[in-house]
Length: 121
Image (cartoon, rainbow, N blue to C red):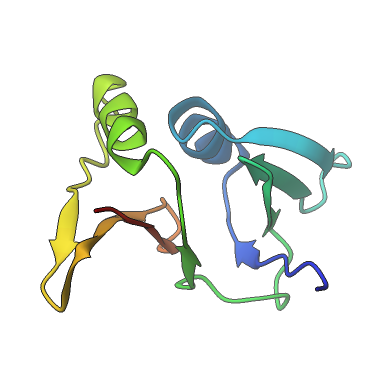
């Protein structure tokens, strides 16, 4: 199966570092950040790749990315809460249509939404 990599529109480099790297725990795989030009970077969260672009016209803010089968979601959720990030305090919920599905939604500073889910017993 080919790899699918979402590209999300972002605006502020420092906010990316604060949110994606310091809070979510992503790592930077590579980045293009020439002086006085829009930046582009690829990040990874547990091997899942996401591209972040400041380039106008490449994509629009407000995307939804679903990360399925996220192993250890309860522990990951608690690790995020323990960091006390002042702009996001995500909940952890069981889906009303399937009580074996645990979900957590977060919104980045650029209005992109991530839904993490894990099937539990």
